[in-house]
Length: 283
Image 1 (cartoon, one colour):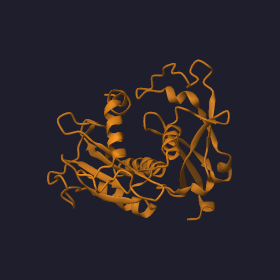
Image 2 (cartoon, rainbow, N blue to C red):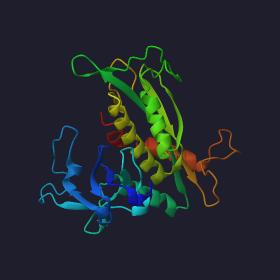
Image 3 (cartoon, helix red, strand yellow):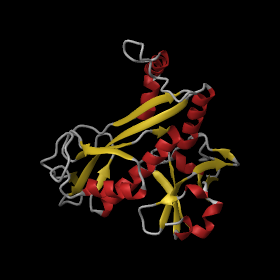
Image 4 (cartoon, one colour):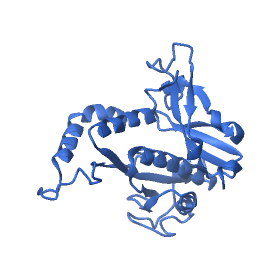
């Protein structure tokens, strides 16, 4: 489908809770972008709001702009709808709290030192099925196992439908397999530049959850949705490419194969572990 054939453009952006916020725009008006309330960045999962600095909560809840490049609109998983990830701005400046702004600043910091961050992400998720009481229960896949594949691991074909949709839309899936517990799956995408990888995973997650919903199931990436089962992981594989295109994390002459830079990165993560936990593992 050519971009001029889209009936609607679905403009999405990741918020601070990793939720996909956005709007549908008629294609004829999409080039001008759209606007959202800045104060959405003060929302919590339960819809409570707090006067967080930088969100305009006490300043009249002002708008922010969402811009995107029309050439980046890609086929979506809804008929006649293209999808694109937008950037958030306020008064012509990037919104500091916007996740894409935060990531872009981190990438720029590495690039100023001569390195290009490369990231690969492995997702883990549970498929849930409806229970008789109107809630959700674990996917009934008694033949599932870690590294399981086939109909015994995915009897209703939910993950197969996600994989087929991803392939049709050009997502760069590296592998999909059963994880440790019943109804749990690992979905891995190929590594890429940090921003490209983050955008790809953001859209893939959104697509996967919606395909599952269309098939009457719930796909959840929550850290531990089933207390008696194991948790879902999110593996972020980071490497740094130097000016020659080599992996700066590797030193084949070292006994462990790690460069001094790689060890500095590990030391930095250990040093900031407590602060990182507040953002990466708040519960």
